[in-house]
Picture (tube, rainbow, N blue to C red):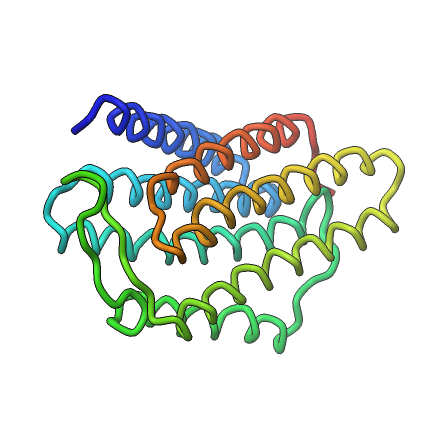
Amino acid sequence: MTQTLLLENYSLLMAGIINLFMSIFLISRAQQSKMHLYFSLLTLFCFTWTLGLFLSRSMIDLSSTLLFTRSTYVSAIAIMISLLYFVIHFPYATNRLNSIHKMMVWIPAILISILVYSNFFIVNIRHAYSEYEFSHSFYKLSYWIYFIYIIGISLVAVYFLLKKFSITEKLFKNQVVLLLTTIIIAMIFGVYFNLFIIYFGDFRFNWLGPIFTVFMNMAVFRLLLFTKNK
């Protein structure tokens, strides 16, 4: 394994550990605050996403690599759902999902997660660049269903935040703006490095998405330390 690849993988591992720490720290506040509960889940799934990438980039065996690679796509779905519920409760609960909305979130999530572990999502996997690096091909229809779902949940979260900004008290407007900014930045980098360029077969930079995301999570984590849920 090259020195550059080692550095990238250890950066992933460090990002995962930071996310896990934030998740464990905030879960202690979850009983009093759903806001903290959902951000704890968000950082936990960021940890599993990052760990899956770390393991997939650390193995020579392609079958093990494929298993952990599939897990990263499911973790990303869990991240987006946790983000949506976190946004609903930050800095106080609004825009609650009704039964139909919940079905629109959860039914596709379950079906797509099952699809990810089938051969109708990742068609094949192969070594590329080095014995520890790989690329894989997608079944295009399944990939675009996945892509649209991820982007759709992201845009709903952004919409809820924009709506919340328009009605929230002045005291919380800066907090909403900070969260909105971090989400948009994380979306841009996450979608680009972990969805867009890998569709065209370039997996060399898939470690960068979690690195940018952990910095966004740290900014929100710091904000939560000084925010009380209403």
